[in-house]
Length: 322
Ligand code: NCD
Image (cartoon, rainbow, N blue to C red):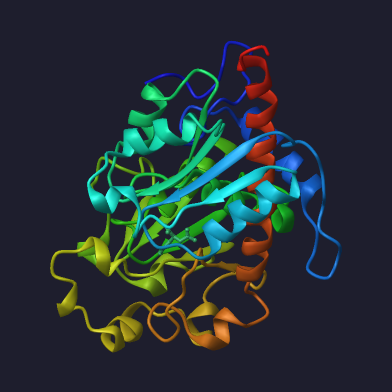
């Protein structure tokens, strides 16, 4: 794979958080903090992406990630293409690469891509023109780098540190690209106490999430936690999803107000969305005082602005002269 960074350590692509240093992550989070505006404040408006064209290619459903890349791009002055890919060329049999080449010919500079096929972002990095960047907005169960960044920004804002934190990820970890990217970011930033909590069948392979403790009882997994990340059951990635009973799952693994008392008093409750209330999380918890779920969404726009700005700064060095 071509590197995500150029020889001057500028960000060229972002498809995984693996391999990025603590300093690179921290600098993206610092930039995101400068772009962040609270709901009710006027949004940041800049020209960092003036003259840049960003194409959002989403081959899987998405609400918040797609909206947030769209807003992030526009707020920095980019032209944005949102393609309806269910009704476009791929449905007619055109290969992903031909779609990319077509859009490259229209001077698209940045591709934001979500796809259910593992390896697609890496494949694109190897085939796009030298002045074109690829950002993953979710790759199969493998990686979701901007979600990992927004999760650690949310944690940093409240906790001001990563070492010594107890973080529990609860739910369908096996199929979760969010869990993988968030765990990578946490490990790079210094969190060593990671707990994975799921029914046996939804825990990842032993070789993954090195150093994490595994629990099949939520009460044990979230005891004393500083941060709890709740995940949806990704039935679309399972062969026998129909046999899963939502009510039984909630009884065994749902985050209820009673269970939340087992964590620290200052625990942060997180969820990447979409949430299934009454399945993995009780509404009282999702909307309760410990929830930072909407802050995650707010941070998502800021983090995507930071990533796009970093990539645009690198891109100008690789463009063809007029
Ligand atoms: C997640 C995703 O698509 O990976 N959602 C998101 O990007 N906010 C998680 C999920 O779909 O459960």
